Image (cartoon, rainbow, N blue to C red; front, side):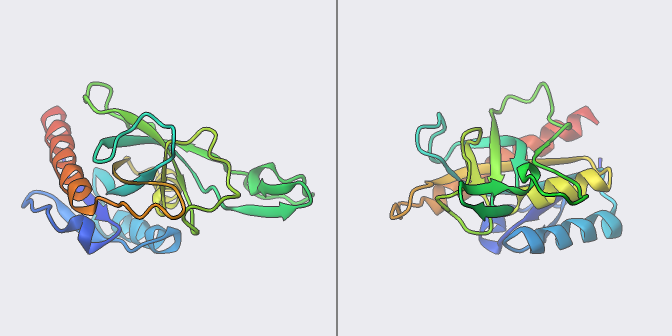
Length: 199
């Protein structure tokens, strides 16, 4: 199986070394990730494309700092309009225009027999934004929704893996970058081993 891994930053990629897997630094954010994802699909033609990085966990969710999870769904959470009633997601906006109303994007490639918890993600351009709907979300990142969207449009098999580095709370600067990147790297190796054994 030809596997390729995208990392948003060089920091997240720093501990991962593997001769049988191609890696790429995609860049931070939805725009950079969309370009890197499409480029990887068209140029490298992987059998499985993985986005791997860190993420914040929302307060009250049952995930611990340093824990690693596969992301089962993503929402581009800050795409929308502010109205008199507050922020409304673009998919739910009552506007008389014809456009693709995408909201929750699901990953249909989650390995059913891989022993790792799954989490629901949201992607934002403005981290820790107070106006977005986090009701059905566990983790916050800045790339996943673009990655999901491009992979789905291109019919590319994909997975997203995240290690929890911080609590999503303004003023909480207790990030554990070292632990989360190390945990993410271990989880990524395990996932790749599993995929290759099954192929």
